[in-house]
Length: 331
Image 1 (cartoon, helix red, strand yellow):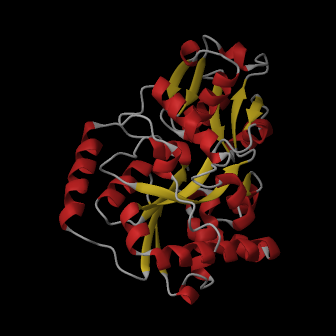
Image 2: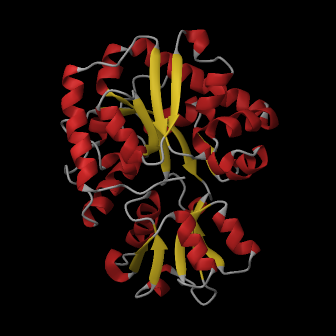
């Protein structure tokens, strides 16, 4: 599941120590890449490419590690123990700094109905949420999503009362009647409708291309292991093509790999229906180039604005060119 950004002093200390460590200790090895991620359906194709041997056939060994928090993955990457991380582009903005250099090499998926806002039946618009409690995970994709929607309608971000909970906890609190609204994701959206506890006011299918999962790699990896990066992208594209042609077989493989609440193939298939996967053509169109950025640049701009407004950009603005490398897309 998509987790909140952790701003604790302990984590900041760990990241600072990790950055110092990487200057003296190197973990990178040619022919090997390690990727951290939390549980999310959009990362399934990485397991598919690994288990079908698509990385191996290009001389690459990919180690995939499930970590509960993006913050933990980023700390591991800062220390050199991970080559990169899969997470949402808005989430990454909060970590990029002059000391922690990484760049997005391809877009994996975008939420297309998998995330949403559930409300009681008497709430019919975002404006109706003013002054009301809204349960969500602060600093997470959920907060970014509702903040984006409010910003589009010129509704002040501080006009709602944010109750900090995980997405699952928010859904439980909503169904129990403890809060009038919650920001969550599947399977919670369907659960709310099944239990007739309320309705989905808006979901991510109505804001396509806003909640976007990407894969980033450390700048040192991109510079020192370009052949491995090419093999990673090539194997990933091949896995997507195979997934389209063999949905049932691949759902089982990906469910086993991703695990968590997606361990059962039927659950994975249901969750997969709420995302759009980005193949080679999609990536080229969506990411564009450094000289002519695609729609991804608008999401980066929005992320900067929203997280700055919410006081969650400790390192200042992150520009498109600082966090994107499009040179590997055409594999």
